[in-house]
Length: 64
Image (cartoon, rainbow, N blue to C red):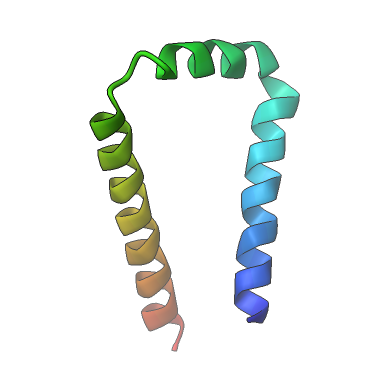
């Protein structure tokens, strides 16, 4: 559970950096993202989740 809370905190840090450093670019990206088909966004989300799981799995297996 501790690792989950740390991971959640890191996600918030990354999100905060994007909002703090490039709010204009983020707004523009959000406008353009509305034009992307749902299926493409869904596929990108699944790919990002898979990559995240792979990274966590590799780090955990190498640190033991």
